[in-house]
Amino acid sequence: MKNTLAMIPGELTADYRVRLALEQEHAEQVHRLAMSELTATENPPEARIRAWERTHGLTLPKSSDHPVLNSIAAATRLTRDQVHAEQRRRVTPVMAVAPG
Image 1 (cartoon, helix red, strand yellow):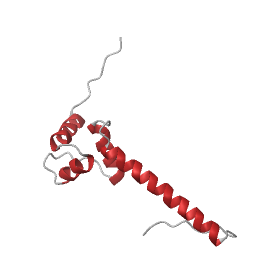
Image 2 (cartoon, rainbow, N blue to C red; image 1 turned 30 degrees about the vertical axis):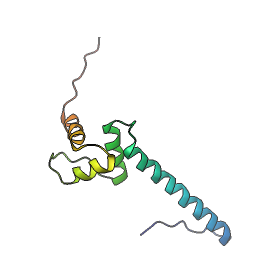
Image 3 (tube, rainbow, N blue to C red; image 1 turned 180 degrees about the vertical axis):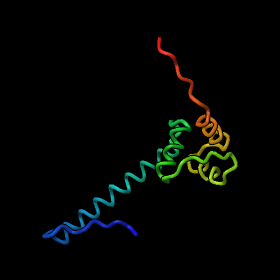
């Protein structure tokens, strides 16, 4: 079920329709931006995968043979090897650098 903006008490129907159209246009712009982040070649693989995660509300699976990896690779225009590299990067512990 889609969220629909409620009419403001006293709002004219014509004004409500304009407000609804503006909201829809804004939502479409946000969606287009999110989709462009998925495939932007100037974005590194980790940024594209994070964009995919935000868009779908999911996290990159840890299993290297998870069936969704093909979909992630296709949606982000990455190779499966690039997706696997990001999986490996995420499980590799970050070494703490001692100050000084």
